[in-house]
Image 1 (cartoon, rainbow, N blue to C red):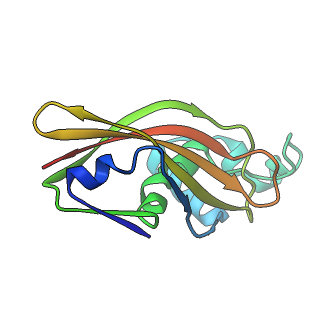
Image 2: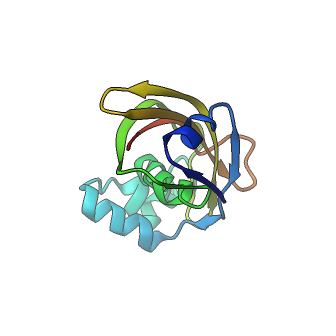
Length: 151
């Protein structure tokens, strides 16, 4: 894990590869819980019997469930101290190239694309997130995540 203390050290991360998080397993229980809280109960996620005859041979994780793991997985890679507040500012590009089956494992590979100054004594960090799917040539998700840090 890398630690950045304060705005200047955050700025110094521009262009840096931060490595990969630990693997996280996808279970039907996690998918069902995400379906319940998100309201997305489509059968491809929640009905193992019907999904077995579907295009992926079984249930798959919601793309947004995988994406939601970005923040806790990123916390394994970078610890920021010496700031007053961090704000999840949003996402630029998001794609889901490969389905994540039940039993699959996902981890995050992250790098800092850029860090720019923003008003109110802050910086904006744009990060490249690649959610690797174990055993797959294609990633489960690729995204640009944007966070703002303020002193």
